Length: 211
Image 1 (tube, one colour):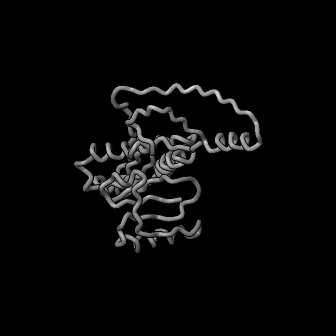
Image 2: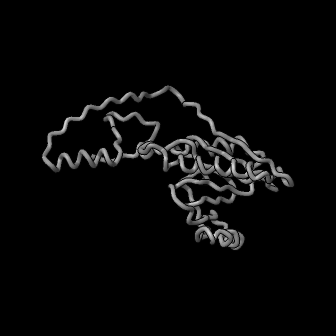
Image 3: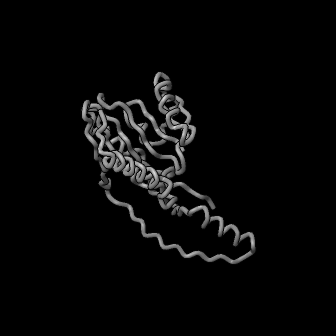
């Protein structure tokens, strides 16, 4: 028995042999029954169907316009869809809630940022970063004005590091920012690049927050 990941299996192939994905705990329980010598009978009711052609989804986009440089944009985002083997709280309900919370906190502060902060909940991340790809296509004319992006993904818990997507020239500036957070916790800064989340689709310096 295998704990499969349907994203790895692919979304555009019709398998002759049916494949059923189980959560880790369900699989472990069956394995414990087998180890205990119990007779197992499983009834499976799968109602998934194949559709003809693509399925339309949507990103959720909102912004707080900058007071001095409204055409310069920083994206704060997370993916709205969930990992197919989980209930979605960790991947990526956590990131979605943090993006909405950040937008609310800025609005409640009564302060307007100097530059525009655009809050984006990307859809279809698990299917191949489709939502962020669509965002880049739709906003291609203004991508040169994107200063960077902060994408919240990869789990729950405190932020431990900022990855600057290969931009080692930005490390000193972000290090100063990270040090300002030292009374909360230590946050590392490095120039690592991440290609397994929506930052990979944005043609700007990326800054995912790893947890």
